[in-house]
Image (cartoon, rainbow, N blue to C red; front, side):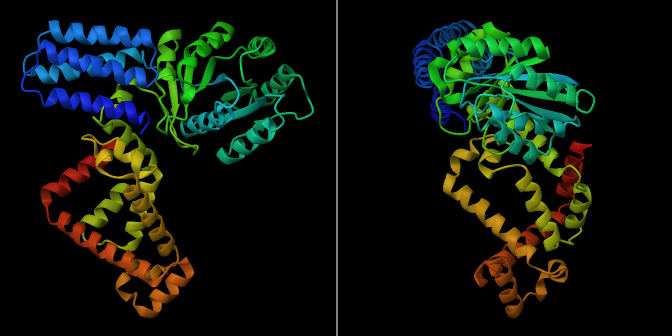
Length: 443
């Protein structure tokens, strides 16, 4: 989980409120100090922390709970509200024809983010293209070219040209009629120097971008605020993309930088893969941070993973008792498309991810992957009727999949257990009806 230490500290504070016999000024002052300490340790800007803690304390002491809400629930709600508020308003980039200029210091994940952004717009039905405007770093051209090939989008650059503005102009001319979203990757430096500022301004004038996105590494800490302000003064940034929010980095400095410059965080990068990228929503982010879950994001991930698959048809087959290895393979394929299990559990309410050790989830993820490899080595006949898979077939399948015989037997055991469970579901008419109703969410 992003900001693990902060999340755990805040969850501990909420637990303290929930377990309190009654809410009094002593408890409120105590939880306010706990929140202050947790946020400061996470590198959140000191001024913001003091403002936030004063608001929480004032509201908790003066406001009366609304009808139907206990004092404890009301204080938890106040903490949630105020944490969401310091992250600012959410903003989604429009799904339309546009030019996006990416800026940021060297090593912040700017080029990788260009690829993730291109993939995002491609999935929305638009035609993105990438332009490498970094003519200083020798590997910049090859890196962005490889990223473009990975996400399967057009790319333009000129290794011989040293005039960044000319390269960008030529790229814009090339993609003017064929692309909807043109993403321009600009040069970075170890610090914001005069020549970088001048080059950014020149590219800005030449491209007249609709969006100017600042890419920032979440581990940057307290330097995030001054960095964001410097870039904002140069090109008037319209949004911030935070990268490397998948580890246990403090990250609070980068999160609070948005509030300092008044530019919204529009996306967060949560991993190395091109799909580890999501629009930023303060309410959902804080909900996950506090262990309250994020069912909406989970459903969106499920819907994206299920796209192009007839989920309802598969469900009807399963409910009728006709459950084959083909159906189980489809289930695993859809689950895999939603991302790592650890990230899926973080979206479930009740702190599910905290109850499962990382090693357990990694082991389960690896096992499911191994099962899919084994099924890839099976014939269509075996997939439709696993009962025919006996000793000689087990040996052949294991050899083809590069696994041991016991791994194939474990798959068959898992299949039989799943089939029995599905049979139990099919016998429950009410559950069956509710499931089919839920499957309409993507329509």
